[in-house]
Image (cartoon, rainbow, N blue to C red; front, side, top):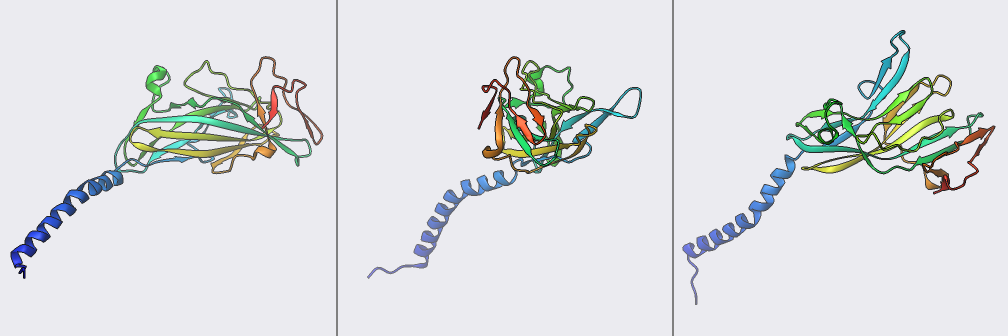
Length: 249
C-alpha cells in the first residue's frame, strides 16, 4: 500500500498551481489589456458643436451650417489612428400635401472624413487619421448645409469626389450611416439624421439611431451626367424619364 505524505500533497498542489498560473496568466493579461483599450462612441445632437451655424457677413441671418458628429473615446488609453467614414445616406421627399413621402438612397462609395482638429491647409493624407486620448473627443465634418438654396453638400477628404446631388426643394430629412475605426479599438457604426424646415430652409433638428428606410420605400439615386431631378406634383412623386438614373432597390 502506497502512503501519501504531506510532502506528496504539497508537491501535487504546487504542480497544479503552476499549471493554473501558466494557463491563467495569458488570460488575465488579455483581460487587463482589454479593459484598458480605447472605447469609441459616436454622438450627434441638434446644437453646438455638431450643428454649427455660420452667419452672413452683413446680417445675423444664418448663411450655412457645418455638420459634424462627435467621436468620444470613453476608454482610459489613447485611440491610435482613428478614422471616420460616411458610408451611406438617404433623403426624404415631402409632397405638397405633406403626407406622402418618398425616400431616395444616394449611391456613394464609403468616403473618409476630415477632423476639425486638423487644419484644412494640412494635406489630406495627414488629416484622415487622428489620435484621441482617453476620456476626450474629436469631431469629423461630414456636410455643409446652405440655407438659401437648401443644398446639403457632403464634405470628404477627396474634394474631387462628387456624390449624387438629390433634388433639394422638397427635402425634409436626411439620414446618414457613418463609421469610426482605430488601430487599437473596435469598429463603431451609427445612423444619424437631420431634419429641415421646408418653408425657410433651416435645419430644425438632428440626432442618431433612426433606422434607415426600408428597401420597400426606397429608390436608388445614381449619379449620371444630366440627371433629371425628381419632380413632385400634388401627392405624386414622378421619376425621371431616364429610368436608369433612379432604380427601385
